[in-house]
Length: 216
Image (tube, rainbow, N blue to C red):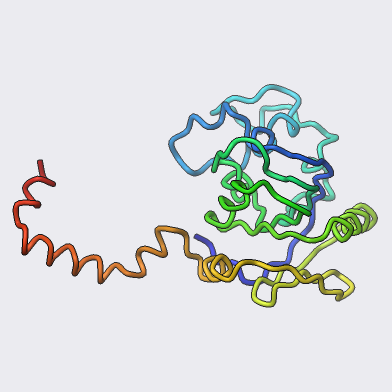
């Protein structure tokens, strides 16, 4: 999992409340057994004028010119600004995968759906909560100033605006530790690989018949 310490990036405004996971990555794209390739279909039904299916070439499709991510001023955005209850709906882990693979590193909103919130941390995506009035002001500034960027400093737990103003946020210490060190659940387990290997060797030495059962 990619580490997150400090990130500076262009902000894209998703000016909708209650954006659910089916809007983030529609259900027809969940057929894949891989964890990659979802970025081109992020917000697919809003992003394109035609109906999308797995395997379609994005270059051959009809983009919706009114959708925020298709507007030239937001190309290359890596910070998503959203309204309350972002990520509601089903628990699909494909939603943070699609956001991450599109290129987003952080999402700022007044609130998130719980399962999406948890899944984001487990996949290297930082969902950070700021007061609704603060988020509303950020929307105004993003709309007013093309090229608007924010710096997200997870170490200091602040969002730094272009004028230098710092907006504090809080992340639970364990989640912060995992993100800053690039550790997902597998990475956390592998920190103890030597102990695991030693335990397995001791167990098989004491109960050698287990090796035959595992091979069978």
